Image (cartoon, rainbow, N blue to C red; front, top):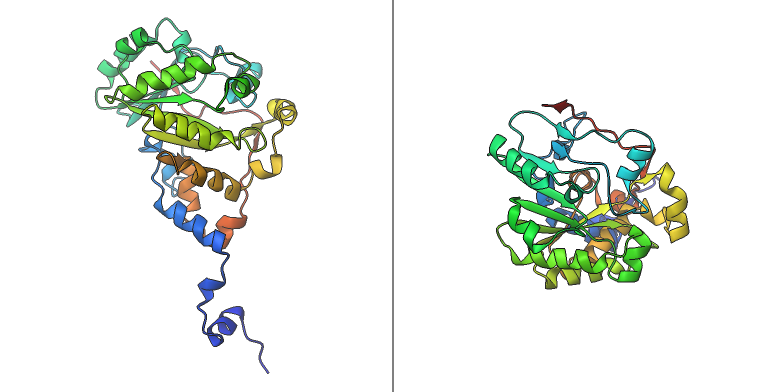
Length: 301
């Protein structure tokens, strides 16, 4: 007698095959289907899966220096390995968006206002995104800036945990920066948080709730890339390396944050997740290890 397949067995019992799927897997798939791409990712080459070698938006780099020393930071790694980009514009003509900046803390530079104005005049059609840790943002400085999107990094919901992650006692400064941009609806405001299981699991929904209470429009929850020079620091801080590579764990964290704010996950990751069936999504792992970040874009005058 021929052995029945699982699909045939399911139908013989009056159950459609898809119902045999893990309930949590279907929940994850539905969650991914309904998620929007982060505002920052819109227009990025990484959303086009047919592109064999996508690159990030153009960026204007002001300085590789930073007043934080985060345990996960790729920019620190680039500096230590001599791979941090020199100040300047990395991109092409007629960009969809420009980020200021992807390395270092841009608000350290005394040229931030000047460069912001120059980019607005040189690329009037481009969306200008500010990526900052927020600790140096004041009402006075914000009144001189002109960005369409501002992303402020916050990976902890308390002063103590923030100090542990950033090695800087600036938690209240960052919260105040969120308050400043949350009040100003001329720019879209985003809290940018890195998923670090074992370190900030419980903090993520609390960060989402705090940001929402301050008027922040969106949370961009990003997966952790573990660079070799940061491994020991992350281990000492309590990172669960196994869970850090789990797509399921990452999406579950996003689902918790979704209760409080418009949460969105990394755009290039989301584009891939949408191609997965529920069970693959449930069990898949991402390659979260790297040696050093690479700047794929060319510097132009």
